[in-house]
Length: 448
Image (cartoon, rainbow, N blue to C red; front, top):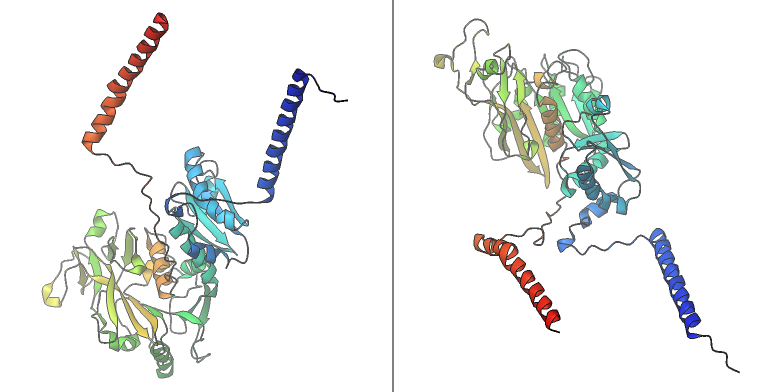
């Protein structure tokens, strides 16, 4: 005996079964999305996916990476920032992004050194770095620096009245040294009379304005360090150079007599004409994309030419209207050609580099130690420039080569003729077609 349900009940059961199966499918889909995280990037050149270099870099992180974005409560701005950081979070779940409103937390914003709206601060294992450029290359290279800098030792020579990287006197470099520690560098002071050797793991040796001659044995240790391929920066000042200049015999380095004076200082409201101003920099990795004004109090002018061994690149130059004053810095000051005073632009900093044992070696001479001192470090862009120079000298500029991703489907370029045709079509032709079709439908229904 076959029982057959009425057609109406059968349709209702089929409908109920359909909705039950649909709800089950939706529930299973939601469960799968929570359990398995799979992404597909079908954009041109996969521009929403990290490059292999960035993905490989993230595997080197040994702990969480904190990213703070100092962005106002602007949904569009915060959405753009989140979209750039999201690909990193898809690979590493311990990368955390936090938004901070500068208007509601001004003290925290000042302490973090934030200057731009939406600027990022990346923190990793007690080290941090601010970033104002929002793209993969800038973010990945900042992460790389945070990873590498814990391995960089900066050794400063002491014992002859040098400026100390840990000193608190006005002429010392303690504030700059503290910033280097915050950026992940490790500092060590070294008196060669007590420890007659330079550590082999030294990334950068600093000689900062010694006031007396080095002993022959000390000078030999520094010369051997250079001959073996070590990186070094010499901060000097006008006046007696003691015996440090002999270390640079092969580079062709010369230091002009006198102190640089700059007529542009008065226009900037500076009290002393002996403060040189630099606002343009050579196209060099140490000053790449650097566009801040920097100030150099009581600086010496340098000259140098490339030799058979070393390449010499002038990095820091004064503006026109400056010269090396050899007379007193009081009263009315004028340039005197007879005294060998040369009109600017004058060079304050020179970078030397060569290839030694298939590796790059870098030396730098700056004709001013005051610009990084505790008294002047906070002026203009001195701090930022100092960090750039140290990164180049410590070879932290060997950054990731991440190709720029472009796509042909994000811009539409039309000729004026095509643009006018499209405009006329939407304004006149398309409305006329809609009206005509409506009238045609109305006429057919009337005659039906």
